[in-house]
Image 1 (cartoon, rainbow, N blue to C red):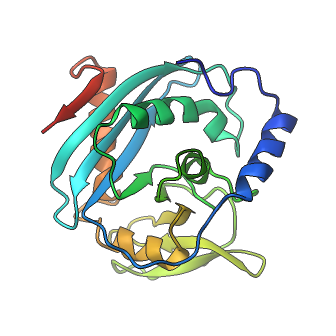
Image 2: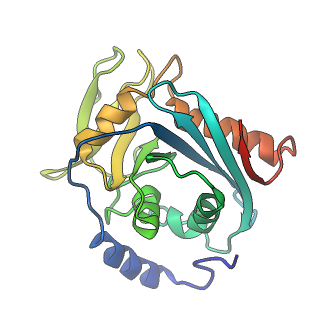
Length: 229
């Protein structure tokens, strides 16, 4: 599979983000979720080879159902705010390989909490027309107040007066995670879902388990492909 964005420039990438933003749908909707998945990508700063994985879990039980792993090449530089152009090829490839598609995908990255509302999760969601949401470990864009230190506390991330996500305390007395819709989910939908995906760790189960899979894949312990548990 050729890279989606091998020769695109930053100005061209900005224009494309603005075009894709017009396709976003972040209206609140009734949730009927039986499967949820987490996506993670491993890429060394100076490498062109990406290891990508998606794990599917039952919902709300969060029991593993299946997983997909791929390697892909990227030639787009690391530029903050343009992560999708570096990693989307691998994410789409791992998605297309999956025989079962989940109801919701949680990506270790941002949705609309992005300067142009087009973080990697929103970008992926518009490319695939997939309900998706981002849950990132660090803030990229917007202002927020620290939530209370107890588990489940949250505050809103704002861009001026616009709500673009939440800082959510997924574990007491640890740093919050940053939640925002990608596509075909609303802000409140995303917060509702992530509340049901947290356990004893700071990182929610879908992306935590995806991260473990991708690390094993990168070390050669797992093989590329789609597998059922």
